[in-house]
Amino acid sequence: MQEQLLAFVSQYGAPALFLVVIVASIGAPLPIALLLIVTGSLSQQGAMNLWTAIMVAGTGSVLGDLAGYAIGRWGGGALINRLINVIGGAKRAHEVMGQIEDRMQRRGRLYIFLTRWLLSPLGPWVNLASGMARYPWGHFLLWDIVGEFFGAALYIILGQIFSDSVVALGSMLGDLTWGVLALTVALMIGRALFSYRRPPAA
Image (cartoon, rainbow, N blue to C red; front, side, top):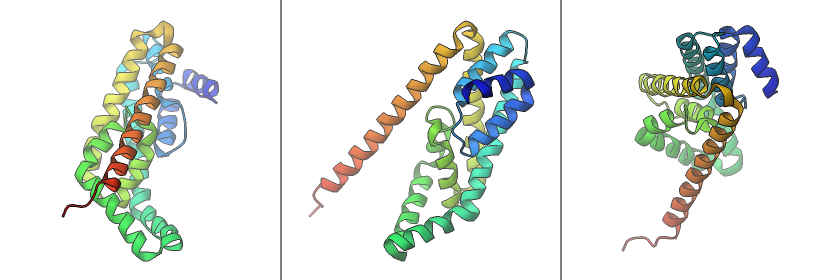
């Protein structure tokens, strides 16, 4: 799959890159970081214009994210409610939705920005959660654009600078992303356990 995607973008250029990043932003597990790094290498070789690549990658990612947001806003909440109703009843469904809404309202901009480039495997889930929580569309779009274009520029320029070692760079950045993601999850679990074990105030 990875080799096919890279060959697809190498052969068809910007239109192929646009299509792939949209599909990945909606939720398909595609190696976007490596793809953007290879795109940077292609721009170094003159096969694709640097600024065109950044614009195409950023715009396609934003459109895919907006699709995920729309799914969450107009379908995700109802689906989650039905699932939790079956498992834990209406009260539990209401509690879960309340927690999602509270977290998005308090830290939504940070979640959106970081999951565009640093914690990208969580991006599609944050898009759905933003829609389900009815996080303000304008705020979502603003932080989504900032994060996606920052991430696209970062990876593509890195690929251009390190054009001769794109596979090694992609592997290193992929390991870094999963490492940061694992650390974030561990901290969240630790915080939840600490809150659970802490005795209530008198």
